[in-house]
Length: 210
Ligand code: FES
Ligand code: FES
Image (cartoon, rainbow, N blue to C red; front, side, top):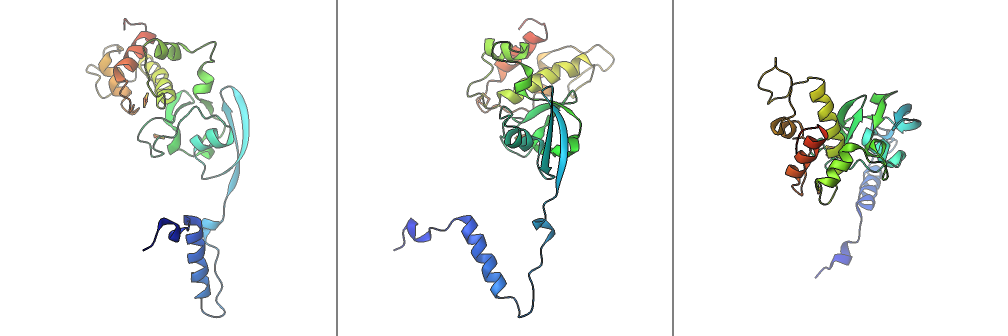
């Protein structure tokens, strides 16, 4: 009978063992070629993050989210799915919200980036942060930085007159309605289900009765 300890190989050892086996089975005189995947390309990237210029040398495959979290140690933006499906990584880039897990840092040379750390400070909260606290717009808080960045961007979109899928009259002035907020926030998933409180918080910041 075998126990768990009999298979005490981790993934790295398994891959290394497999590669060694493959090399020993090469015909005499043949050489292992370096594949393009082995060659890492690095690039200098300059970003303005929360008002500060940051110069980084990055592997060109680094997402904007990983650049912020792993290289700048700004861990407020969360990695939920890493597939553009949950909105936990939302940042504001040149005034527009973006799923930072889905974009490469090198694509944003010179961009102005705002993360949750740049919106407000513990003793001077951004109005959207204060409204989330007041309306209990979170439970575990994991989605909250993305929700708040998205909420700020949503109000800017409505103010700029950008219609959404639920805008009924494209010729009328846009209103901050619950339908508009829910539609525009639909890319920000909250597994705790704090949606109604989030809508109340955004509505209050928009200056309408919550
Ligand atoms: Fe980027 Fe989920 S982590 S959308
Ligand atoms: Fe927990 Fe949104 S507050 S996922």
